[in-house]
Length: 329
Image (cartoon, helix red, strand yellow):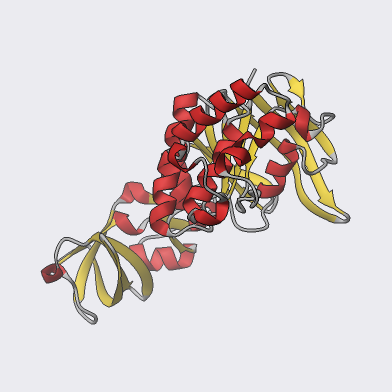
């Protein structure tokens, strides 16, 4: 039996369903990301697991124990929110120790565990500072330490990085993943950022309109989307209906297809004639807009040198890897 089992879970607000028949299994020590657009139900699902939101039906089993009847305090779960929710009148050490005080852990053990977890998140030198003396990334690490110090059976992270700038967000997600692996801590992470999901997760549950539409590791979700929504949300697929695809590929196509931008090659001569409409610089990648057989496509090419840039209006050839053409519902 899986460590965390969610079975036929339902939640509505009045006549508005948030999700229904949610069913998933998570193994001990896994890092699982709930990925999806705003309003798909991922944060509500996390709050239901934590006990902060009541469910309308179903089971949440953690180590074979049904959590639904239990209060949040008795579930043994740590949770980190997007907002740090630190006590402004307490030092870093006092904020981290707060949960242990509620559990009536002894003074000496509390001091030891707070020191251990502050070292884990690289904040032991900031123990005496107050939240207003810290950066946003440091505050988020305090919030993480506060959840870890109670030694939870399960860690829930609700978009904890979305308010941070890109450089700090990248560093902190690497740190969170390293800590999770070091502790072997079963973790559910909520985000709408596909890069975070792809780089951090053992598995991803892609959600849309209250349903888990696809689950798997990062590679399978990226290379084998099950439908048009998955293809549109993961990566930057070119989505073409059957008629448009037939016109592009010069052969009959009977269903909608998805083609990854990096699966299209640009050549001086190729199987398909095309014209460059423009380009965007995305750091190490140049994203071209091209038109071929009356069809507009996105093509991603490594940014090797300025001298290789293809100008607007230039005629080129395309070749498309047949194995990268995916049929999607």
